[in-house]
Length: 457
Image (cartoon, rainbow, N blue to C red; front, side):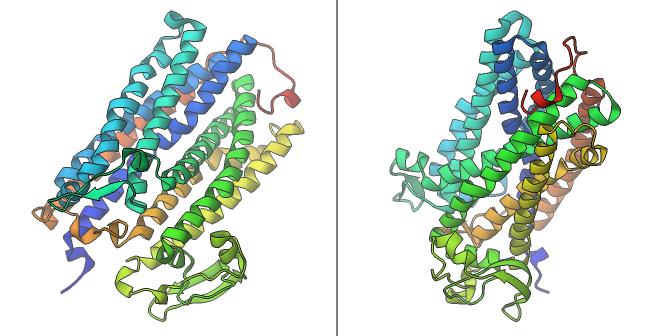
């Protein structure tokens, strides 16, 4: 009997999807948290206020735990290119291997070389040396993100390549490859989303301490910085970076855009769907509520622009899971809108000096921190599901990329192994992180500042 579960490609995709989703839970926090650490260290140098150094010491430990688990969970993905995706590596390794190597040699080594100095080297390095270590860690984490996103951007919008004599891909222009316009837009959008995650985590810890009456100066600092930065980053994720990402998809992957919105029939004045359920069998969107013309404007800049529907393209070029793609995209958008509303309201209350006395909002902030992780995961699901049925858009099909010599049983066995191993790693991580949060930052020695001064101090 034919079934998706009998397709070895499905198990390879599921295994890589599981390992990369789990892995990215950790780098998204470190990339966002790096900016907070740099800012607080800079403020400590400028003002001499010890509360900023206390914040750096506390969050450097959280950063270190996330970095360590990110390394452990990232290494298996490199091996999967050879074990599970050998045909893809053979075809495109001459291109994507360049940036994967750069990420390891330049960005990862820079970050890993200084993360220990950031956590344990403050006294030996001195204030300026410690600030330099924080800068190096932040630069390494963001540079690592850029190299990885250049690799992914090539798979979404291949540029700078040539076809070698043996049929594989090679680099024709390193500058075109590294400066892929898709990578610039994706990098800005992705990094700001990482800042949103870090902002929610910082605000959540501040809310936790405020609710328990612990570490009042640090709690106020975390709440002020987390909510304001979270508001700014959430707005920037939506516009201009999200807007530009939508335009890139519309211009270069029109099938993906149609699938994301459940558009089966094309036309001008295409609307953005607020609510609706994709009915692939009937090729329609059930119970739709739309904003007329909004999709035409967002994708192409004019309300009357023509937006292609799925039926304008052969079915074998459609993404292979339209329902999951559609819901991933729309839930992500919904969460992003709620982030703006929540952080905007919290910032307003903080500016008015009423945030710490609003226990209901503190509870909401404390419990909201998982949702940016969910939104980031859904965003990547939208990007990767939308690219299907291609591994490299327009060049190389997903069905041609997996290792044919690896059986269903082999793939399922290793997936089970990863699931068990990552469960144990997750428990260890939560235990260690919980211990650091329970211990909290060092006891404050500075006076309590006025609440109106705590918007970003």
